[in-house]
Image (cartoon, rainbow, N blue to C red; front, side, top):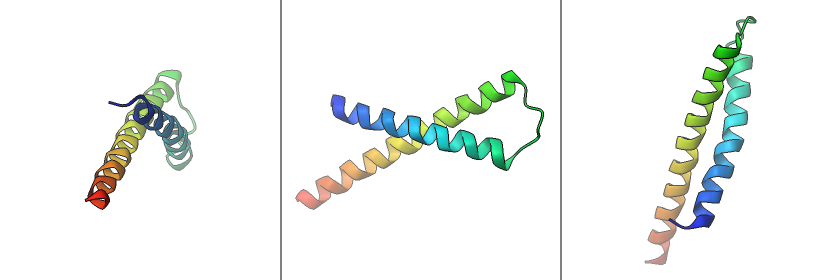
Length: 69
């Protein structure tokens, strides 16, 4: 795997993590979050961001290969 692809995936992951974390906090506001609950929300936001970022990157690579043919 190319190091540039990994950089793009990680950058997208961190950006998506921030967005997903803020959405989760603001949309499902219970008001009394504990530290462990915030850590759990942050962890799952990171995992979701990683999956979305990797999926978009794989899709872009696949469609760019189709255009080359």
